[in-house]
Length: 71
Image (spheres, rainbow, N blue to C red):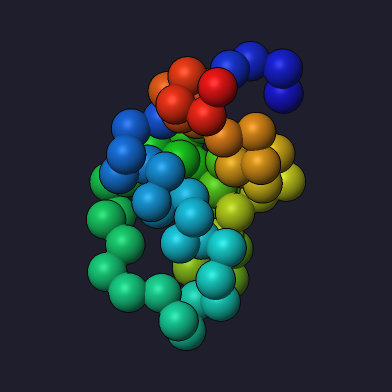
């Protein structure tokens, strides 16, 4: 995925939360998770949503909004 994705703060928090095991997650906003699934950053797997490899890549690259802050 070479497209820059500019996620909302809620989407970033949900994407970060999906890195943890399902048993340790609390109160994920279902509509935000569905948005991540639509972006192919998360997928519904067995016991709930999970981060995809594309989601991990986006998370590692970070938010374009934060690039200016880090510079």
